[in-house]
Length: 180
Image 1 (tube, helix red, strand yellow):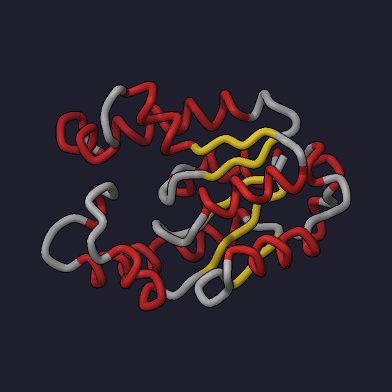
Image 2 (cartoon, rainbow, N blue to C red):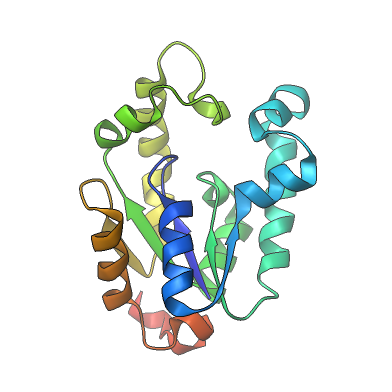
């Protein structure tokens, strides 16, 4: 099982979908699954129910996805905020941190209206703050880290494939936890 973590807009869903195709395994996009189940956009859910309630539901989904054995999971950017999620990602998946500087993402997210934490007057400042808060957590769970901000999707996917353990698509048991 492979999981992808990183800042909003870094390409977890797009890269995850391509990676799953290359590995001939299932793809799970946490945000898309949650929006389908909630029957509304995550932004709308945040406005009505709040972030804490969303994080509870997101965590339950991650636990559910861990029952699968052969999948690529594109997580939501904030999945690492809960310790139990970090433990699951580290112990049950080959977790890859798609790293990008906020400056390289902001042009892509300038007109974004989906991501609730980037709405308001200063999305670039908010993205920088998220990077400061979350980068240590992304690194805590990651077995691999790959620079995502400047590569084409094809080059990023190919580079990622070369870095993955031979059996990564068949479960994290092939990874030596002490090698992290």
